[in-house]
Image (cartoon, rainbow over all chains, first blue to last red; front, side, top):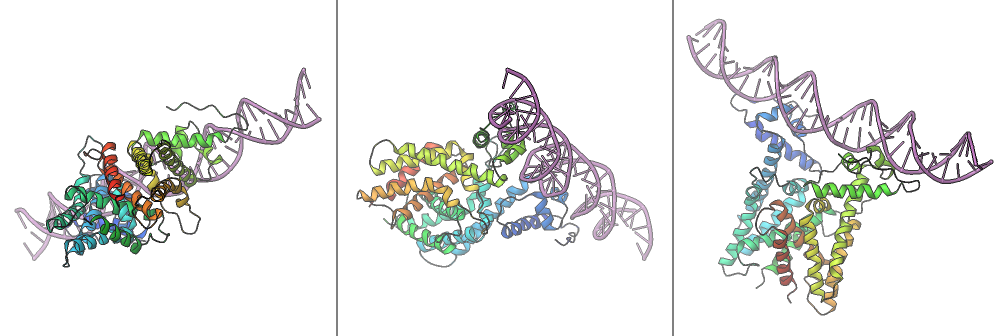
Amino acid sequence: MIARRKRNQRGQGALLRSELITAAMRILDRSPTTALSLRMVAKEAGVAAPSVYAHFTDVRDLMTEIVRECWRQLAQEMGDGIIAEGTGREALTRQLCAYVRYAMERPSRYQMLFAMQPMDKAEPHDIPGIIQPAFRKVRDALRAIRDAGGTIPGENSFSAALLVLSVVHGRIALAHLAPWREGNSAPGVEAFVAEVLERLLRP
Amino acid sequence: MIARRKRNQRGQGALLRSELITAAMRILDRSPTTALSLRMVAKEAGVAAPSVYAHFTDVRDLMTEIVRECWRQLAQEMGDGIIAEGTGREALTRQLCAYVRYAMERPSRYQMLFAMQPMDKAEPHDIPGIIQPAFRKVRDALRAIRDAGGTIPGENSFSAALLVLSVVHGRIALAHLAPWREGNSAPGVEAFVAEVLERLLRP
DNA sequence: TGTACATCAGTGAACGCGCGTTCACTGATGTAC
DNA sequence: TGTACATCAGTGAACGCGCGTTCACTGATGTAC
Protein backbone atom coordinates (compact mmCIF):
# COMPACT_ATOMS: atom_id res chain seq x y z
CA MET A 1 0.00 0.00 0.00
CA ILE A 2 1.10 3.48 -0.82
CA ALA A 3 1.38 5.62 2.30
CA ARG A 4 -1.02 8.52 2.39
CA ARG A 5 0.95 11.58 1.56
CA LYS A 6 1.34 14.53 3.89
CA ARG A 7 -0.26 17.54 2.32
CA ASN A 8 1.93 20.34 1.08
CA GLN A 9 2.32 23.51 3.06
CA ARG A 10 0.36 26.53 2.13
CA GLY A 11 1.70 28.11 -1.06
CA GLN A 12 3.51 24.91 -1.98
CA GLY A 13 0.57 23.27 -3.72
CA ALA A 14 2.45 23.31 -6.99
CA LEU A 15 4.85 20.70 -5.64
CA LEU A 16 2.26 18.03 -6.25
CA ARG A 17 2.61 18.59 -9.97
CA SER A 18 6.17 17.31 -10.06
CA GLU A 19 5.42 14.63 -7.50
CA LEU A 20 2.79 13.26 -9.87
CA ILE A 21 5.27 13.16 -12.72
CA THR A 22 7.93 11.39 -10.71
CA ALA A 23 5.28 8.96 -9.48
CA ALA A 24 4.54 8.16 -13.12
CA MET A 25 8.24 7.50 -13.69
CA ARG A 26 8.27 5.08 -10.77
CA ILE A 27 5.36 3.16 -12.26
CA LEU A 28 7.05 2.98 -15.65
CA ASP A 29 10.31 1.78 -14.14
CA ARG A 30 8.55 -0.87 -12.10
CA SER A 31 6.36 -2.46 -14.76
CA PRO A 32 6.86 -3.32 -18.42
CA THR A 33 3.91 -1.33 -19.65
CA THR A 34 2.98 1.90 -21.31
CA ALA A 35 -0.61 1.73 -20.09
CA LEU A 36 -0.58 4.51 -17.51
CA SER A 37 -3.80 5.98 -16.15
CA LEU A 38 -4.60 9.08 -14.19
CA ARG A 39 -5.83 6.99 -11.29
CA MET A 40 -2.69 4.87 -11.21
CA VAL A 41 -0.51 7.95 -11.11
CA ALA A 42 -2.58 9.58 -8.37
CA LYS A 43 -2.51 6.41 -6.29
CA GLU A 44 1.24 6.06 -6.69
CA ALA A 45 1.64 9.66 -5.54
CA GLY A 46 -0.51 8.90 -2.48
CA VAL A 47 -3.25 11.29 -3.49
CA ALA A 48 -6.92 11.07 -4.50
CA ALA A 49 -7.68 11.05 -8.21
CA PRO A 50 -9.43 14.46 -8.31
CA SER A 51 -6.33 16.14 -6.89
CA VAL A 52 -4.71 15.75 -10.29
CA TYR A 53 -7.08 18.35 -11.73
CA ALA A 54 -5.54 21.11 -9.70
CA HIS A 55 -2.40 20.76 -11.81
CA PHE A 56 -3.40 19.28 -15.16
CA THR A 57 -6.44 20.13 -17.23
CA ASP A 58 -7.20 16.48 -18.07
CA VAL A 59 -5.63 13.09 -18.50
CA ARG A 60 -4.16 14.00 -21.88
CA ASP A 61 -2.41 17.00 -20.43
CA LEU A 62 -0.94 14.78 -17.71
CA MET A 63 0.28 12.20 -20.20
CA THR A 64 1.78 14.83 -22.46
CA GLU A 65 3.76 16.23 -19.58
CA ILE A 66 4.96 12.78 -18.60
CA VAL A 67 6.20 12.15 -22.13
CA ARG A 68 7.82 15.57 -22.20
CA GLU A 69 9.62 14.74 -18.98
CA CYS A 70 10.88 11.47 -20.44
CA TRP A 71 12.38 13.28 -23.42
CA ARG A 72 13.89 15.88 -21.12
CA GLN A 73 15.56 13.20 -19.04
CA LEU A 74 16.82 11.40 -22.09
CA ALA A 75 18.33 14.62 -23.43
CA GLN A 76 19.91 15.27 -20.07
CA GLU A 77 21.56 11.89 -19.89
CA MET A 78 22.83 12.42 -23.42
CA GLY A 79 24.19 15.76 -22.30
CA ASP A 80 25.90 14.26 -19.29
CA GLY A 81 27.79 11.98 -21.66
CA ILE A 82 29.16 14.85 -23.65
CA ILE A 83 30.64 16.84 -20.83
CA ALA A 84 33.84 14.78 -20.80
CA GLU A 85 36.44 15.91 -23.31
CA GLY A 86 37.18 14.27 -26.63
CA THR A 87 36.78 14.72 -30.36
CA GLY A 88 33.38 15.34 -31.87
CA ARG A 89 33.15 11.77 -32.95
CA GLU A 90 33.85 10.43 -29.49
CA ALA A 91 31.35 12.84 -28.05
CA LEU A 92 28.69 11.66 -30.50
CA THR A 93 29.41 8.05 -29.68
CA ARG A 94 29.10 8.69 -25.96
CA GLN A 95 25.90 10.60 -26.55
CA LEU A 96 24.32 7.79 -28.51
CA CYS A 97 25.49 5.18 -26.03
CA ALA A 98 23.76 7.18 -23.31
CA TYR A 99 20.66 7.18 -25.52
CA VAL A 100 20.84 3.41 -25.96
CA ARG A 101 21.41 2.83 -22.26
CA TYR A 102 18.39 4.94 -21.35
CA ALA A 103 16.26 3.00 -23.82
CA MET A 104 17.46 -0.42 -22.74
CA GLU A 105 17.47 0.16 -19.00
CA ARG A 106 14.14 1.96 -18.87
CA PRO A 107 12.22 0.35 -21.69
CA SER A 108 8.81 1.58 -20.54
CA ARG A 109 9.95 5.18 -20.30
CA TYR A 110 11.52 4.90 -23.72
CA GLN A 111 8.42 3.37 -25.23
CA MET A 112 6.39 6.30 -23.93
CA LEU A 113 8.43 8.59 -26.14
CA PHE A 114 7.00 7.02 -29.25
CA ALA A 115 3.61 5.97 -27.94
CA MET A 116 2.13 9.46 -28.25
CA GLN A 117 -0.48 9.57 -30.97
CA PRO A 118 -0.20 12.62 -33.14
CA MET A 119 -3.11 14.75 -32.03
CA ASP A 120 -5.93 16.19 -34.05
CA LYS A 121 -4.83 18.58 -36.70
CA ALA A 122 -7.25 21.10 -35.26
CA GLU A 123 -5.49 21.66 -31.97
CA PRO A 124 -1.92 22.82 -31.55
CA HIS A 125 0.51 19.93 -31.17
CA ASP A 126 4.13 20.31 -30.36
CA ILE A 127 5.55 16.85 -30.62
CA PRO A 128 8.55 18.33 -32.44
CA GLY A 129 8.97 20.65 -29.48
CA ILE A 130 8.94 17.70 -27.13
CA ILE A 131 11.50 15.79 -29.13
CA GLN A 132 13.83 18.66 -29.86
CA PRO A 133 16.05 18.57 -26.76
CA ALA A 134 17.37 15.13 -27.77
CA PHE A 135 17.37 15.69 -31.52
CA ARG A 136 19.33 18.92 -31.24
CA LYS A 137 22.08 17.28 -29.24
CA VAL A 138 22.76 14.81 -32.03
CA ARG A 139 22.53 17.46 -34.71
CA ASP A 140 24.94 19.74 -32.87
CA ALA A 141 27.45 16.93 -32.40
CA LEU A 142 27.31 16.15 -36.11
CA ARG A 143 27.70 19.82 -36.93
CA ALA A 144 30.81 19.94 -34.75
CA ILE A 145 32.24 16.94 -36.57
CA ARG A 146 31.64 18.55 -39.95
CA ASP A 147 33.06 21.89 -38.81
CA ALA A 148 36.20 20.06 -37.68
CA GLY A 149 36.58 18.73 -41.21
CA GLY A 150 34.93 15.34 -40.74
CA THR A 151 32.44 13.67 -43.05
CA ILE A 152 28.81 13.42 -42.03
CA PRO A 153 26.20 11.22 -43.70
CA GLY A 154 23.86 13.65 -45.44
CA GLU A 155 23.69 17.06 -47.03
CA ASN A 156 23.54 18.85 -43.73
CA SER A 157 23.61 18.17 -40.03
CA PHE A 158 19.81 17.97 -39.88
CA SER A 159 19.47 15.14 -42.38
CA ALA A 160 22.52 13.41 -40.92
CA ALA A 161 20.92 13.53 -37.48
CA LEU A 162 17.71 12.13 -38.91
CA LEU A 163 19.61 9.19 -40.37
CA VAL A 164 21.57 8.54 -37.19
CA LEU A 165 18.53 8.72 -34.94
CA SER A 166 16.52 6.55 -37.33
CA VAL A 167 19.01 3.74 -37.18
CA VAL A 168 19.49 4.01 -33.42
CA HIS A 169 15.79 4.11 -32.64
CA GLY A 170 15.01 1.39 -35.17
CA ARG A 171 17.59 -0.94 -33.68
CA ILE A 172 16.27 -0.31 -30.18
CA ALA A 173 12.69 -0.97 -31.24
CA LEU A 174 13.70 -4.31 -32.77
CA ALA A 175 15.65 -5.20 -29.64
CA HIS A 176 12.65 -4.42 -27.47
CA LEU A 177 10.53 -6.89 -29.42
CA ALA A 178 12.80 -9.76 -28.40
CA PRO A 179 14.92 -8.67 -25.43
CA TRP A 180 15.91 -12.24 -24.57
CA ARG A 181 17.83 -12.73 -27.81
CA GLU A 182 21.57 -12.45 -27.71
CA GLY A 183 22.66 -9.21 -29.30
CA ASN A 184 19.57 -7.45 -28.04
CA SER A 185 21.09 -6.70 -24.64
CA ALA A 186 22.17 -3.15 -23.81
CA PRO A 187 25.86 -3.80 -24.61
CA GLY A 188 24.88 -5.65 -27.78
CA VAL A 189 22.91 -2.69 -29.06
CA GLU A 190 25.61 -0.25 -27.99
CA ALA A 191 28.14 -2.24 -29.99
CA PHE A 192 25.84 -2.22 -33.00
CA VAL A 193 25.48 1.56 -32.77
CA ALA A 194 29.22 2.12 -32.42
CA GLU A 195 29.84 -0.04 -35.49
CA VAL A 196 27.20 1.72 -37.56
CA LEU A 197 28.51 5.11 -36.55
CA GLU A 198 31.98 4.08 -37.66
CA ARG A 199 30.53 3.14 -41.04
CA LEU A 200 28.42 6.28 -41.41
CA LEU A 201 31.21 8.70 -40.55
CA ARG A 202 33.65 7.15 -42.99
CA PRO A 203 34.48 9.56 -45.85
CA MET B 1 -24.70 0.94 -36.85
CA ILE B 2 -23.15 -2.32 -37.86
CA ALA B 3 -25.66 -4.62 -39.55
CA ARG B 4 -26.36 -7.78 -37.61
CA ARG B 5 -24.51 -10.55 -39.35
CA LYS B 6 -26.15 -13.62 -40.82
CA ARG B 7 -24.97 -16.67 -38.95
CA ASN B 8 -22.67 -19.08 -40.72
CA GLN B 9 -23.98 -22.35 -42.09
CA ARG B 10 -23.50 -25.50 -40.14
CA GLY B 11 -19.91 -26.65 -40.26
CA GLN B 12 -18.75 -23.18 -41.34
CA GLY B 13 -18.45 -21.73 -37.85
CA ALA B 14 -14.70 -21.33 -38.29
CA LEU B 15 -15.34 -18.57 -40.84
CA LEU B 16 -16.05 -16.17 -38.01
CA ARG B 17 -12.44 -16.40 -36.95
CA SER B 18 -11.15 -14.73 -40.09
CA GLU B 19 -14.10 -12.36 -40.18
CA LEU B 20 -13.08 -11.13 -36.75
CA ILE B 21 -9.54 -10.50 -37.90
CA THR B 22 -10.59 -8.62 -41.01
CA ALA B 23 -13.00 -6.61 -38.83
CA ALA B 24 -10.03 -5.62 -36.69
CA MET B 25 -8.19 -4.50 -39.83
CA ARG B 26 -11.14 -2.32 -40.80
CA ILE B 27 -11.08 -0.64 -37.40
CA LEU B 28 -7.35 -0.02 -37.64
CA ASP B 29 -7.66 1.43 -41.13
CA ARG B 30 -10.50 3.69 -40.10
CA SER B 31 -9.07 5.23 -36.94
CA PRO B 32 -5.63 6.44 -35.92
CA THR B 33 -5.36 4.23 -32.87
CA THR B 34 -3.82 1.03 -31.64
CA ALA B 35 -6.31 0.70 -28.78
CA LEU B 36 -8.34 -2.25 -30.02
CA SER B 37 -10.63 -4.19 -27.68
CA LEU B 38 -12.38 -7.51 -27.95
CA ARG B 39 -15.75 -5.81 -27.77
CA MET B 40 -14.88 -3.34 -30.52
CA VAL B 41 -13.81 -6.15 -32.82
CA ALA B 42 -16.91 -8.22 -32.09
CA LYS B 43 -19.16 -5.23 -32.72
CA GLU B 44 -17.44 -4.42 -35.99
CA ALA B 45 -17.93 -8.03 -37.08
CA GLY B 46 -21.64 -7.76 -36.21
CA VAL B 47 -21.45 -10.36 -33.48
CA ALA B 48 -21.93 -10.49 -29.70
CA ALA B 49 -18.80 -10.29 -27.55
CA PRO B 50 -18.97 -13.85 -26.18
CA SER B 51 -18.91 -15.26 -29.72
CA VAL B 52 -15.23 -14.45 -29.86
CA TYR B 53 -14.49 -17.15 -27.33
CA ALA B 54 -15.44 -19.88 -29.76
CA HIS B 55 -12.36 -19.00 -31.80
CA PHE B 56 -9.84 -17.38 -29.47
CA THR B 57 -8.98 -18.40 -25.95
CA ASP B 58 -8.92 -14.84 -24.63
CA VAL B 59 -8.33 -11.26 -25.65
CA ARG B 60 -4.57 -11.73 -25.76
CA ASP B 61 -4.89 -14.62 -28.17
CA LEU B 62 -7.11 -12.46 -30.40
CA MET B 63 -4.65 -9.56 -30.37
CA THR B 64 -1.70 -11.82 -31.07
CA GLU B 65 -3.44 -13.22 -34.12
CA ILE B 66 -4.30 -9.74 -35.32
CA VAL B 67 -0.66 -8.70 -35.07
CA ARG B 68 0.42 -11.88 -36.78
CA GLU B 69 -1.97 -11.12 -39.63
CA CYS B 70 -0.53 -7.61 -39.97
CA TRP B 71 2.98 -8.99 -40.32
CA ARG B 72 1.75 -11.57 -42.80
CA GLN B 73 0.15 -8.88 -44.96
CA LEU B 74 3.23 -6.72 -44.79
CA ALA B 75 5.40 -9.62 -45.90
CA GLN B 76 2.99 -10.35 -48.71
CA GLU B 77 3.06 -6.80 -50.02
CA MET B 78 6.85 -6.91 -49.89
CA GLY B 79 6.74 -10.15 -51.82
CA ASP B 80 4.43 -8.69 -54.45
CA GLY B 81 7.04 -6.04 -55.08
CA ILE B 82 9.74 -8.55 -55.79
CA ILE B 83 7.96 -10.57 -58.42
CA ALA B 84 8.90 -8.18 -61.19
CA GLU B 85 12.33 -8.79 -62.69
CA GLY B 86 15.46 -6.83 -61.96
CA THR B 87 18.78 -7.00 -60.17
CA GLY B 88 18.96 -7.89 -56.51
CA ARG B 89 19.42 -4.28 -55.59
CA GLU B 90 16.36 -3.17 -57.50
CA ALA B 91 14.37 -5.97 -55.93
CA LEU B 92 15.47 -4.91 -52.45
CA THR B 93 14.57 -1.31 -53.15
CA ARG B 94 11.10 -2.28 -54.37
CA GLN B 95 10.67 -4.50 -51.33
CA LEU B 96 11.54 -1.74 -48.92
CA CYS B 97 9.39 0.77 -50.76
CA ALA B 98 6.48 -1.62 -50.35
CA TYR B 99 7.34 -1.80 -46.66
CA VAL B 100 7.37 1.99 -46.37
CA ARG B 101 4.13 2.33 -48.27
CA TYR B 102 2.40 -0.18 -46.02
CA ALA B 103 3.62 1.68 -42.95
CA MET B 104 2.68 5.13 -44.20
CA GLU B 105 -0.68 4.26 -45.71
CA ARG B 106 -1.85 2.06 -42.85
CA PRO B 107 -0.16 3.66 -39.86
CA SER B 108 -2.36 1.96 -37.27
CA ARG B 109 -1.73 -1.49 -38.66
CA TYR B 110 1.97 -0.76 -38.77
CA GLN B 111 2.01 0.51 -35.22
CA MET B 112 0.39 -2.72 -34.06
CA LEU B 113 3.46 -4.58 -35.27
CA PHE B 114 5.60 -2.94 -32.65
CA ALA B 115 2.99 -2.41 -29.95
CA MET B 116 3.12 -6.01 -28.74
CA GLN B 117 4.62 -6.22 -25.32
CA PRO B 118 7.09 -9.04 -24.97
CA MET B 119 5.22 -11.60 -22.91
CA ASP B 120 6.17 -13.18 -19.64
CA LYS B 121 9.32 -15.20 -19.83
CA ALA B 122 7.37 -18.11 -18.36
CA GLU B 123 5.10 -18.72 -21.29
CA PRO B 124 6.20 -19.46 -24.80
CA HIS B 125 6.38 -16.38 -26.98
CA ASP B 126 7.07 -16.38 -30.64
CA ILE B 127 7.44 -12.77 -31.57
CA PRO B 128 10.42 -13.72 -33.73
CA GLY B 129 8.15 -16.22 -35.45
CA ILE B 130 5.63 -13.48 -36.09
CA ILE B 131 8.22 -11.14 -37.53
CA GLN B 132 10.10 -13.65 -39.61
CA PRO B 133 8.10 -13.53 -42.85
CA ALA B 134 9.10 -9.90 -43.37
CA PHE B 135 12.61 -10.15 -41.98
CA ARG B 136 13.49 -13.14 -44.15
CA LYS B 137 12.48 -11.34 -47.31
CA VAL B 138 15.00 -8.60 -46.66
CA ARG B 139 17.71 -11.04 -45.63
CA ASP B 140 17.20 -13.14 -48.74
CA ALA B 141 17.37 -10.12 -51.00
CA LEU B 142 20.65 -9.06 -49.36
CA ARG B 143 21.99 -12.59 -49.70
CA ALA B 144 21.18 -12.51 -53.40
CA ILE B 145 23.02 -9.23 -53.78
CA ARG B 146 26.09 -10.61 -52.04
CA ASP B 147 25.98 -13.84 -54.04
CA ALA B 148 25.88 -11.78 -57.20
CA GLY B 149 29.11 -10.11 -56.10
CA GLY B 150 27.66 -6.99 -54.50
CA THR B 151 28.66 -5.43 -51.20
CA ILE B 152 26.32 -5.68 -48.23
CA PRO B 153 26.59 -3.69 -45.02
CA GLY B 154 27.58 -6.25 -42.39
CA GLU B 155 29.41 -9.50 -41.89
CA ASN B 156 26.53 -11.57 -43.15
CA SER B 157 23.08 -11.19 -44.61
CA PHE B 158 21.47 -11.43 -41.15
CA SER B 159 23.31 -8.48 -39.66
CA ALA B 160 22.92 -6.52 -42.88
CA ALA B 161 19.17 -7.11 -42.75
CA LEU B 162 19.12 -5.99 -39.13
CA LEU B 163 20.83 -2.75 -40.10
CA VAL B 164 18.57 -2.12 -43.08
CA LEU B 165 15.37 -2.83 -41.17
CA SER B 166 16.54 -0.71 -38.24
CA VAL B 167 17.02 2.34 -40.36
CA VAL B 168 13.78 1.82 -42.27
CA HIS B 169 11.67 1.22 -39.17
CA GLY B 170 13.38 4.03 -37.28
CA ARG B 171 12.71 6.53 -40.05
CA ILE B 172 9.08 5.48 -40.23
CA ALA B 173 8.63 5.80 -36.48
CA LEU B 174 10.01 9.33 -36.55
CA ALA B 175 7.77 10.19 -39.50
CA HIS B 176 4.74 8.90 -37.64
CA LEU B 177 5.43 11.23 -34.75
CA ALA B 178 5.01 14.25 -36.99
CA PRO B 179 3.23 13.20 -40.18
CA TRP B 180 2.38 16.76 -41.16
CA ARG B 181 6.01 17.74 -41.61
CA GLU B 182 7.39 17.92 -45.10
CA GLY B 183 9.63 14.96 -45.75
CA ASN B 184 7.51 12.74 -43.54
CA SER B 185 5.07 11.91 -46.32
CA ALA B 186 5.14 8.46 -47.90
CA PRO B 187 7.19 9.60 -50.93
CA GLY B 188 9.51 11.56 -48.66
CA VAL B 189 10.30 8.51 -46.57
CA GLU B 190 10.61 6.33 -49.67
CA ALA B 191 13.18 8.75 -51.06
CA PHE B 192 15.06 8.69 -47.78
CA VAL B 193 15.17 4.90 -47.84
CA ALA B 194 16.34 4.76 -51.45
CA GLU B 195 19.11 7.21 -50.65
CA VAL B 196 20.25 5.33 -47.56
CA LEU B 197 20.20 2.05 -49.45
CA GLU B 198 22.40 3.55 -52.12
CA ARG B 199 24.86 4.58 -49.42
CA LEU B 200 24.78 1.25 -47.57
CA LEU B 201 25.32 -0.88 -50.66
CA ARG B 202 28.30 1.16 -51.83
CA PRO B 203 31.50 -0.91 -51.68
C1' DT C 1 -42.23 -39.66 -45.27
C1' DG C 2 -42.47 -37.86 -40.82
C1' DT C 3 -40.64 -36.86 -36.44
C1' DA C 4 -37.66 -36.85 -32.44
C1' DC C 5 -33.28 -35.60 -31.30
C1' DA C 6 -28.36 -34.00 -31.28
C1' DT C 7 -25.41 -30.59 -32.79
C1' DC C 8 -23.89 -26.28 -33.86
C1' DA C 9 -23.40 -21.05 -34.12
C1' DG C 10 -24.24 -17.69 -31.67
C1' DT C 11 -26.96 -14.61 -27.92
C1' DG C 12 -28.45 -11.77 -23.74
C1' DA C 13 -27.89 -10.67 -19.28
C1' DA C 14 -25.01 -10.24 -15.75
C1' DC C 15 -20.60 -9.91 -12.92
C1' DG C 16 -16.92 -6.96 -11.04
C1' DC C 17 -13.47 -3.84 -12.41
C1' DG C 18 -10.94 0.45 -13.42
C1' DC C 19 -11.50 4.39 -15.99
C1' DG C 20 -12.02 10.00 -16.35
C1' DT C 21 -14.56 13.46 -14.44
C1' DT C 22 -17.95 16.28 -11.40
C1' DC C 23 -19.31 18.08 -7.16
C1' DA C 24 -19.92 19.60 -2.67
C1' DC C 25 -17.07 19.18 1.19
C1' DT C 26 -13.23 19.47 4.96
C1' DG C 27 -9.88 20.93 7.73
C1' DA C 28 -5.47 23.12 8.34
C1' DT C 29 -3.18 27.59 7.92
C1' DG C 30 -2.48 32.14 7.38
C1' DT C 31 -4.40 37.19 7.78
C1' DA C 32 -7.14 41.32 9.30
C1' DC C 33 -8.91 43.66 12.88
C1' DT D 1 -3.64 39.06 22.26
C1' DG D 2 -7.66 36.89 20.67
C1' DT D 3 -10.88 35.78 17.22
C1' DA D 4 -13.41 35.76 12.93
C1' DC D 5 -12.66 34.87 8.38
C1' DA D 6 -10.62 33.79 3.73
C1' DT D 7 -7.71 30.87 1.35
C1' DC D 8 -5.66 26.82 0.11
C1' DA D 9 -4.63 21.72 -0.66
C1' DG D 10 -6.80 18.09 -1.07
C1' DT D 11 -10.91 14.45 -0.22
C1' DG D 12 -15.01 11.14 -0.68
C1' DA D 13 -18.77 9.77 -3.00
C1' DA D 14 -20.88 9.38 -7.04
C1' DC D 15 -21.76 9.34 -12.25
C1' DG D 16 -21.78 6.71 -16.58
C1' DC D 17 -18.85 4.12 -19.46
C1' DG D 18 -16.46 0.25 -21.73
C1' DC D 19 -13.85 -3.53 -20.53
C1' DG D 20 -13.06 -9.10 -20.36
C1' DT D 21 -15.37 -12.98 -19.02
C1' DT D 22 -19.11 -16.39 -17.30
C1' DC D 23 -23.30 -18.64 -17.79
C1' DA D 24 -27.51 -20.57 -19.09
C1' DC D 25 -30.03 -20.09 -23.18
C1' DT D 26 -32.05 -20.20 -28.18
C1' DG D 27 -33.19 -21.48 -32.46
C1' DA D 28 -31.84 -23.17 -36.93
C1' DT D 29 -30.09 -27.25 -39.25
C1' DG D 30 -28.80 -31.64 -40.08
C1' DT D 31 -29.33 -36.88 -38.88
C1' DA D 32 -31.36 -41.42 -37.27
C1' DC D 33 -35.05 -44.21 -37.21
